Image (tube, rainbow, N blue to C red; front, side):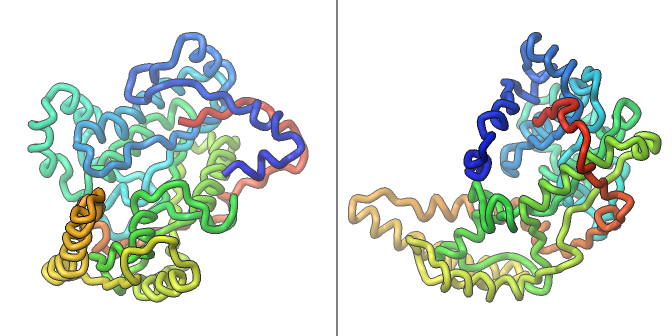
Amino acid sequence: LFDRVRCSENSQDLFAKVVVIDGDITLDGLGITLGNAEILKSNVSIVFHVTANVNFNSGLKNLVKANTEGTHNVLKCSKQFHRLKAFVYVSTAFSNSYLEEIEERIYPPTLDPHFVMLLCSELQPDLINLLTEKLMYKHKICYTFFKHLAESLIHEARFDYPVCIVRPTIVGPAHLEPYPGWVDNFTGMCGYMAGMSQGIVRCMYSNRQGTVEIVPVDHVVNVTLTAAMNVSSKIFQIQNDVIVYNCSNTEHPFAYKQFQPSLLEACEKYPFNETFWRPLLVIVRNKIMFSILNFLLQYIPAVVVDGVAMLMEKKPRMLKIYGKVQALTDAVREIQRTDFRFRTDNMKDKNNIAICPKQGNTSEGYVCCT
């Protein structure tokens, strides 16, 4: 990722500007030492809050601890930063997944986030899990529900310092920077695409006429940086409101029916070194049909391959892989079959695009990234 920076003439000076501080957002005060806390208080002018627990199956208590209570802790800690000019919270475009058309605004919380945090701190995990469906109301998955609650906390903080929210859809491989196709993990949709390319994932539960809501990671980074510049300007500070940016490919939709042939074409051109089967992708929206195809095209081949591996005294792994794929499919099932429409008025509004001055002091203040 940072090879281009390392190759620059002043790379040592650039890396010297990055200071890592140990901490934990689930702890009060973020678990930062008193000495480091003082450094942050007197130096930080911009905060990017990007941290989240993205394991959809980690349980309600763990998700609220990191994604809602963690955001509350970061907001409380940032209030002590004397030079703070901007607080940027990276949420998700699906934070209001009970709606199909999502505008660039903060919607009223379906539950009081403080009540939910108190409830999860007092009750046992098993009891909380029993209440999950009632607490979530019409939200489709736990992860997006707690992002929804966190946005409400951001809204509460708007009188303390300038805040804004960036809502990306599914973050995918890079478009241009650091180079086309760069990706640092194979979780979520990237894992799906890798599995499809290797012939491991052969059927998908979604609407073939729907759109693939993926935005390149470098686009999200650029929007996040620009959002910080915008919210720190005097104009936005006077408004005393929360600007929301829906980072989506709504303006350039990419349908699943286009995704399917594009993926297969890419697999032909750039095949993986190891493939399980010739890539094939069947997209269905019917639950019964998906279950049948999943059993025939994925589960049975996995059993056969693992059986052969055991006979050859090798470690079986295909059923374990399919177990992870199935868990992810179950977690995002309702998201995948819903056709969302994201408004991107703020993203397109030229008045919301800050222009960086060509000259001037760019060293004023420091950035804190959680």
